[in-house]
Length: 109
Image 1 (tube, rainbow, N blue to C red):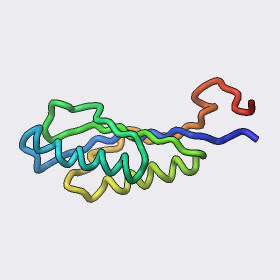
Image 2: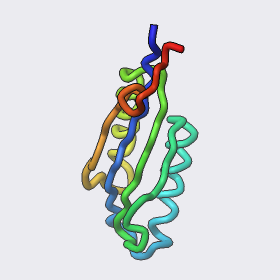
Image 3: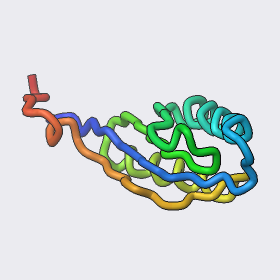
Image 4: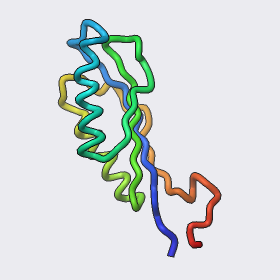
């Protein structure tokens, strides 16, 4: 039986309407990073809008034993993002791919 290990990726654009400087944006972004890493056991990185004080492009990546679990965890993370001191401007990408679909590997060995 082949494993159904999967990787999930969530790319989200955030808006910080109360932010008046880059320093104002750092605190809620650092707090979000800590929660995503600790609570959801996911990787987190700000990948865009570094120089804009009201915007951030955030990439979250997870690994899970199945596509179903990866999808559920991404949905849970996305739900968590809503209703905070920032707004989710848009979800740019949410995808789950099995390891076999990403690489030409034989997981049966």
